[in-house]
Length: 106
Image 1 (cartoon, one colour):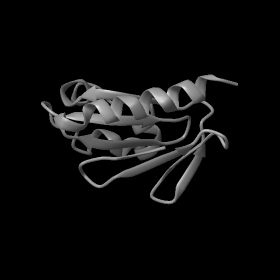
Image 2 (cartoon, rainbow, N blue to C red; image 1 turned 90 degrees about the horizontal axis):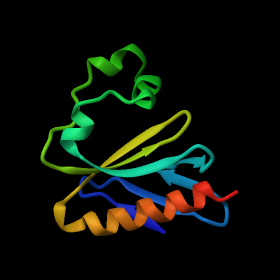
Image 3 (cartoon, rainbow, N blue to C red; image 1 turned 45 degrees about the horizontal axis):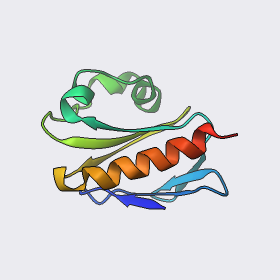
């Protein structure tokens, strides 16, 4: 199953392998959570994974603008964000729910 954001970011996950992939980078679903969030919510916080991924530069990188939706994939040592047009929020929610359900099953 996969999801392609309106910014071209493509994410896929293999339920049987318990992996998630984006731009050739593959991670285990252990500790992964996917959410669909409003841009204003993401703008108001700096996630731990953002800080982990970017180090001290996390505070200097511009945050996402409000008024849009985003798929946020957060893992123990990585974070991905994809823009979602309002017309595609249902597909993004389906992707997030499917990944989260498999990630929670052990």
